[in-house]
Length: 254
Image (cartoon, rainbow, N blue to C red; front, side, top):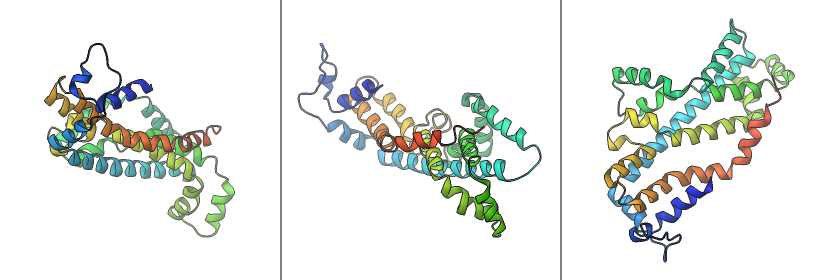
C-alpha cells in the first residue's frame, strides 16, 4: 500500500533524466523542487485547490447535517413506515454510484448546472452510510436522557443539538472525516460534469495535466499528485484513531 505513495514522493523530487534512467535509480542525487514550481507556474493550481476546498467543505457539511437530521428522525420521531424508510436507506448502500451517473447528468444538464458548484455538489448530498452509522449510534443513547430533555420542554431541535449531538460527537466526527476524504478525492462525477479548467477540482486537474504533458513529464505529474494527496493523507493519519473509535462505538446495537 505504501509503495506507490513512496514512489510518487521520490519521483516528484527527481529530474526528468533521473526518472527515465536505466537501470532504475531509486533516489535522486539531489532533491529537485523544480517540479513543484513548474506545477504552480504552468497551471492555475490555486484555483484548483480553491474549487476542491469549496466542494469539500460545502458538500461534506451538508452531507453530515442531512445524515444527522435523518438519523435523529429515524430514532426519536414517530412517523408511518419508519422501518421501510430505513430499509430503503440500507438498499441505497448496495447501489453502485455509477448506476445513477446518467440520470444525474441528464438532470443537471437540464437545470443548466454544468460547470457550476451546484452541479458538482448537489447530486451527491445524500449519504446512506452516514445516516446508517449515526442511527446505530443514536440507538445506544440512554432514553432517560432524551426523556428528561422532553420533560424540560425541549423540542426536537434543542434535543438534537443540546443532548444527542454532544454525546455522539465521536461518531459525528467520524462521519465528517470519512465524508471529507470522500469529497476531496471524488473524481468521476466532477470529471463528467465539468469541462472548464477554472471549475476543475484537484483530482480532475491531474487528468488535465496528464493530457497536456503525456508521459514525458512524470516529475511534474507526480508533484501535482503529491499536492493533491498529502493534505488529506496527513489529516486522515492524524485522526485515524478517532475514526476507528467512532466506527466501533455503535457496532453492538441492532
